[in-house]
Length: 360
Ligand code: HSE
Image 1 (cartoon, rainbow, N blue to C red):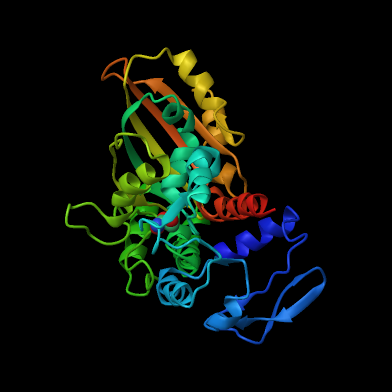
Image 2 (image 1 turned 45 degrees about the vertical axis):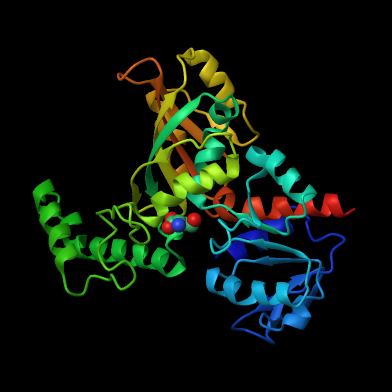
């Protein structure tokens, strides 16, 4: 899915101009690949190391197992090209840089200068948090952040997106009779949905439990610390991206909700000092070209700060910005972003450009 979105974005931005791309597959070798410049060449074998090694740069959206298997063999064979990857397998390795250039261009430039060859896109939730709170981090105002997330089905995978829609349909179909009956009351609908969720036929092969009309406060596997791996990534990846002199605590609870492809997050930010709210808003709203400050007003919030308004776009709205009751140095905020774009594909196509610029 990330590969498809990346391809769409690269075509939309004319990124293939001047390149000689070759497309590889682990499972569909030989079928026609994407028609770039009008010509659809057959997909090459993604395990053909000699063929991969002909290229100056390789971009992988294949997943961590593929990275583990192929990258070390390529390096052992002497390949010195740029490896650009969406998977998490190499993110925390010392010979990799996590890329989110609107936020860490300086880190990226230093890495290129130092000869780093592996550039990896960050976890979607982390990248979207940093895009949204960029200004606060840049000013050095953040002492710690708690991010409570509302993560879309797409983060779990393509099959899970389909299953979410199947779950919605299952419940909708069961409620059809009630919806035709003007006398049906709220508790009738509630019973109907509850019965549907408990039905043996309820489609839940992928999630294992209902997501539609419910939520799942668990993403990825348990770490020894009691965090999920998704929560752990929030701290380690954010700090690897930012590379501040002292690590900034980032923690929270990651929750899967029934959105399709946009992750939302509610933040509590402990500021290092009491910065006036208007100054905070001005810094947050102008930190990069994609963050959009949403006024802390009901209509503006309802009409722009939700997955329904952000899906398929590059903007990262951030709103509900206000000082919290805990004290003048506690800030609340809420943000939404498309996890397939800024959360996955966009940092990859942008690092590709940056590396081309360096190579020219
Ligand atoms: N791990 C994320 C999720 C998506 O499950 O939503 C990829 O970064």
